[in-house]
Length: 194
Image (cartoon, rainbow, N blue to C red; front, side, top):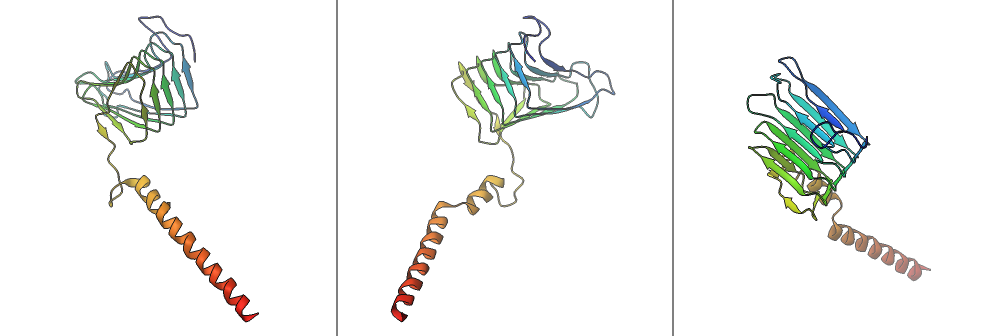
């Protein structure tokens, strides 16, 4: 979606359910939101008091050259909102990711956030969390994530730590050397018995 909205209103995608019964579950996958004046993607719970709130996911998407990239706004006394962003590019926007409000949770994984006016903004108690594998560099003001996403692995470190235990270069090198030594010994033994 490109070239939508004006400098003060509109934009590409606005999620704003209202009333006590309003809620939303949204998934964007493989979406391009470019050159939209007021913003690329925004969740706004103004006027919404539903306990279900808003839950959204953005995956494998490009959000660039918009007035604002991704914004989640939850005024006090309204519904909560959570957003997961993964495998995406958020660049060349007025701001990259904005969380505004204590009932906001944004989780970000494997995403490029660069060349924005502000990279990451967390205001009014919002949680903008990282999985630790994002590229947050080259913005006028990079900003910072408010913390790390808690890992579910009871041993700590989650999937990445388990992967490191499996794909461990010193272990692999040791295993390779052991196999090479065993093969060498077998060849020498055969030559001696030949």
